[in-house]
Structures are given as structure tokens and as C-alpha cells.
Image (cartoon, rainbow, N blue to C red; front, side):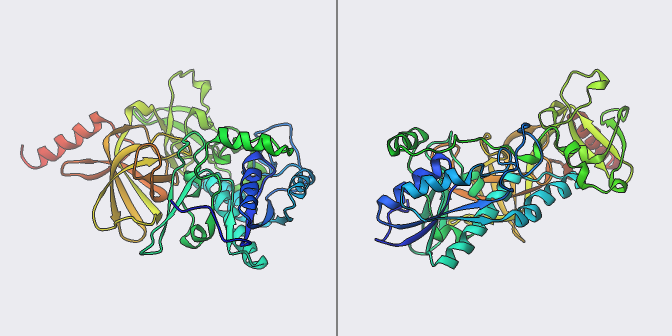
Length: 414
């Protein structure tokens, strides 16, 4: 793995949040003799606050890498004799995260705000590093890096501490960003970081587990102030199996493909107790179609907008493990590289449910431990194959497949 040790007095710009991980990372870099500069990137207005941790605002309790007390952060880095800066990126955040959350919700597509905010953080970090003449950037993320000495390509790996691993968030970084990046916590576990933080004796904020804003159960209601009234399309919710209406709804912005109970799907008025998932949205009619996820399955997913990790072989299919959430399960399959920055993963076993279009996926070389990131992209479709019928996109059921196969046989005279 690439060493985090660096040349004496090399200038490095580290992104900090006032919390333990970035503070320890800055401390370790300084101990190595580097000229460390710290920058806090502001995605929200200082002084904004909310008693509701789920409010769709630029509140530090919600925004990934949000800052709540610049003075506290400055004191911490002053005590370490590390120059501290603050950069205002609110405008970029609104354009690249906030507005896209609203736009994707209107399209019924998923959007991972945590991944998008991480990318924005690194874009700002690289830009500011060039301004101050820093050759390296750093963060307090838990992941590992390796450079191929022959090709010069950089690869990202998951952390040995899978509980704290953040490679899912970093998988979309460019080769330029990875080449500049140092991760001082790459070989550390959270418990080790906590010990160093205690030894340092500086005051930091408690670490936070930020949610993906897009999946907030109350998001549909909260984005309404950002929508023109004439764009809100009311309609009805239907059961897929029998095409029976279940209930009416107050707007398509309350739904997205793959949405379930945990991410805000609420049709309790029907008295139905079983879980349901959104499988189709008709923008013109306002029709939303739901189904019991146990009746849905898929064997393949196609990814678009892919970024492939260093060392990936684009000629032959690879045995891989794909992950759809930051700390989600890695599912085994085979990766097939396609044209135009796309790929397809065929799963080793049939998967139940549905993966919504726009969902971020990260492909790893191993199921656990330190695993190379091979690819990342957004889900275009999930589907399964039927003999003689090509791709069959969800939703579908075994009974529906049997009907199609029998119809094909009848057409062929069997």
C-alpha cells in the first residue's frame, strides 16, 4: 500500500470538520514533519440551526461534513500550530447537491447526496491546494491507496476496519485527486484514532453519522417550497399485480423508484401491513405503481457513468462483489465491461426486490477485508433474463415469466 509518509516540509492541505478523525489525521501529518494547512469547507451558513435533525436545510446536523462551530475548530488547530482557513462553498453545494436532490426526486430517480457532497469536497480541496502551492491533499477518511509503479495508476481499497470504512464515498474520485491524496488513517481502526485523540487533549466535536438526504422519509414535504405549484402532479397509487387503486397521493415528488417504507413510502391508510416498494412512476398521469418486494427479483444490473479503478481489466469479465449502500452488504457476481463508461453485473444468485435507477453502486474485488475498488457508477436498470425474450425489466414475477415463456412456445408451435 502507498505510504502516508512524505518528504520533510512538503506542504499538504487537509480538509477538516472539527471532529476527531480529521484532527487526528492533521496531527499525524504534522508529526511526520509536513507543513500542514487545514481548511474547513462551508456548505451551510454559520448560525443556521434546527431542532429537527431531519430538516432539509443546510444544517450541519444534516449536511455531510457540516460544520457547527468555526471558532472551536480554529482553536483546535491553533493549539496544534496549524494554519486554518475556511472556504465558502454554499453556492456549489446548492447547485451540485441541493438542487439535484430536488430534480432527481421530481424524476423519480435516486440520488446519493453523501457521495455528491464528498466529490464536491475534493473538488474544492484540490482547487485550494493549487492556490496555496500544496502538492498533496488529505482527509480523515478511512480507506487505503496504492499506486502501480509501472502504470502510475492509483487504486482505492477499503479500510481494514469495515465498520468505519469509507471507500464507498471515495470510489468516484479521479486519478488526479487520488494521486494528490494522503489518508493518514488508512491503516488505523477507529479505536486507535480515539486513543490518539484522547492523548492529544484537544476539544473536538462528536463524530456524526450523516444520512443520505435523498432517502429522508419527510423529504417530499420538505422540498415543496422549492417547487412551482404547477409542477406538482397529484395522482393515484396502484398495486402492480392486479392494477387496483390503493389510494390517492399529493404529488409525484413524494416517490422514487425503489422507495420502500424505510425511505418514506407511506400508504398506511390502506390498512395494508406488508412492505411495498415503488416499481413504476408515470409522470404524465401521476400514476405510481407499487408491489410486494418479495414478488420481485433480478439477476443483473447495468451501470452507467462509470469510473473504473486502477488495475481493472476491461477485456475479460471479473468475479466481483457489488455494494449499493455505504455500509451495505457486498453481493457476489461477475462484472462485464461495456462501451461508453458502462458495465453490467450478473449476480451469482437471484436477488429479491428492486434497485432504483440512479442508485450509486461500488464494485469491489473481495467480499471483505482490504478490497480493491474496481468500479463505481449509477444503476440504469435492474433486470433478469428469460430464454428467448432477452432482457426483462422489473417488476416481474415467476408466474409472469412462465406466461411469457408459454406464449413464446405457443407462437413456435410447441
